[in-house]
Length: 273
Image 1 (cartoon, rainbow, N blue to C red):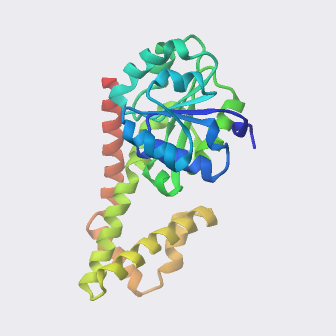
Image 2 (image 1 turned 30 degrees about the vertical axis):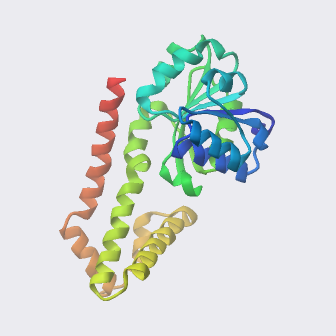
């Protein structure tokens, strides 16, 4: 352990991503429930979290900040400035972690006390099943030890990479939005099988398991995806017939352009902050 287990972790905002993180941290046994503190505008949600996870909950964001060594800001981007203004005087030596999409580190550093350690993280919705792809960008005063602690927290809900912040828009286009693209592909694969006679439940299972298995091969084999494709593609066989159709219909180009379009939208949203 790098030390996250000895620290108090706070959450301002307990939506899908915030709750997924709380659940992942506890399942990974990084800290005891008594060392997690959370606030939210939804009192009913806080009651449910306290009952299910036995964590500490508060209505006041400042109470969470004061009781945290690592403070995770998990609110909607348009709410960030309001929260930062509210907690500014409660920030002493905490590591402040933002998972607010599109909000730059500079926004946090300008709004919080001088030399506040800020880390920006872009997880994705697969955090809800502890298979998130998370990109971490450290701010100007963040140490390697700080990055290690934040990485340990986010590794509890998936896997992490550390990148320069200027690449975060590309991350948003790829892993941030990518799950939605894969859901469409899984649905389309299943539709094809249903057309050929499989029942929907079986088709969905086989399509999803096929995508899961293919993804695991990419991660485990650590070889070029073209080589993995060739492992399945025998001369004159069924797979190459299907690949020809995919290339004719522009599936590859559509996926590339989807990532680029999402990245461009992320840049637009960032400029509005």
